[in-house]
Length: 385
Image 1: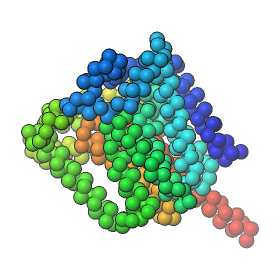
Image 2: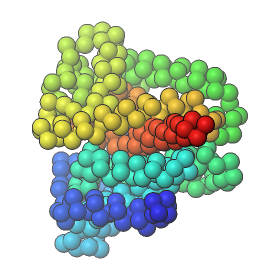
Image 3: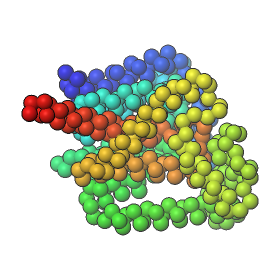
Image 4: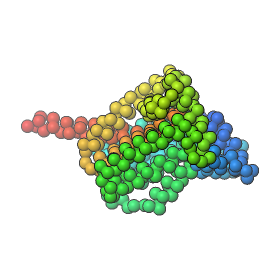
């Protein structure tokens, strides 16, 4: 019965929509970012989009969200805020459907798919943004689509290639949020190394390490001396990042995370390393007691299950191994990107990889289920003998 129920897309969608919708209580919250999006949307309404399409920032990467926001404001009238909240909840429901489908394809039991669903719908760090007028719920589903397409090809050799759909999903992601560009090398890695196996894993690993070191070197040099940046394109943003980091900032607007102001390039690298580690930090002094408790109850078992899933997957069959490598790569590359740019204390920038974290933890549940069944079978045979 559980297997039949969790295989129904309508059940997964309605469960997520109802739970996340109830959390919003039909209210909309406009943060500082939301106010900025509304202001940029006003530019679309008046025909003055200079605030969006400027070389000094990357707001143009949020074009798709701004178009959706503008369309809803035009068509929904005074009710546009609640419509945007409903849009967030629907995006979350669609993401849950895709995520559970991947979990079912990778699992040995329906318990794994159910675990993936529960880990997603019960994650407060995802849930809390449902009432906000922000890009993150929309980017969550858009960023997951390319992963879902390539993950299906990892798990099922009969899954056909969909290059046009994949290219379109990547283009849409690049015009929803700046990290959308990260999906391009990630998809290429999965396709060329894990699916088609055109590139040897060792060669790919060497290339990834070299690219990461190059990115760290270039980024450190530019932040240390912003004058090295050769063009006016996003130079104000680079100068802003540099100015904040030179004050010792690790996590944006979180004074408790600040280090001694850096004096050398190595000091900047230390801050980047600190920021990378803090990408996985789930409590901060700025959180309330309830928030800290909720995150501890959630992330401690999730991280433990994720480790079990990763270790078990690397020891499993080739397809399970490729799947957990793809999950780990997705999480690691996003963590490196935020370490090299900016990291917020409220987990918004980490939302795109929460589904991958849940899937990796679900792999851990699956490994435990397989071990338990094998143990029970051995005990039964021993009892019969």
